[in-house]
Length: 337
Image (cartoon, rainbow, N blue to C red):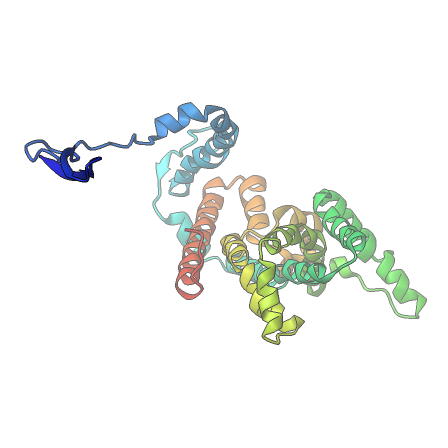
């Protein structure tokens, strides 16, 4: 078909010219579809293979040192004897689980672990948040950098050095007792007194971990939009209200993520530090599951019994992580997955 268009000639008359109209689609033919090329993982791997090579060593480490050793958990259900098969020689079912459930010593150790883990979570977890909020209010940049450097340096110190410093400070002839003696007080044997172990352990944990944990929260604070603070000031909010309604809300995803991870390691109280600091006199408050497993499994060669306790601890940790993540998802709206 064509459309007619009129044009004016030199004598004033009108002439009609045919103007072609755009071709209409033929109903007998289906329209051509442009199919997007699928972005498959093979194409992504070919394109960014150099970046993916960085994952080889971490994945190999996890496979060799984290997942393959899980096969050894089978000896929690089998009787293991040194020199025999690494997977045990005789199936005993839940015999070793019944042994530690009926063992009063295990429940004493379990109670110590829960108390130390709970104190670490209650005291050590919020301290980096508080320090990050205080550093965020500083306006003198050189002093802020100085405090950051001094606070996170203990994280890089060896546990052996930290334990040696603790002994130098709290021993009978240590710094604390020298100060007490200078004011006429009797020395206190802190390292031999079970009542002082938890205080010493938690204090050293705070000193060693608070600075390193602050780094994550300071990084999260930089992502908060300054316009939110300006809007809060316009609404009449003071500094404390801005911190509560803007700052803490902005770093809440980071807080929830770290909290869920810390809850997962609730029972994994630091083995190295406890092992270096405790002694038979402080066992009533210092002995935890990890050190108990060391004595039972390594020193006494009761590997099946120790594996059963370790498997029980891992199951509790898994349940705690899943429960904390689900609770966070339903109540706060933020979770790991």
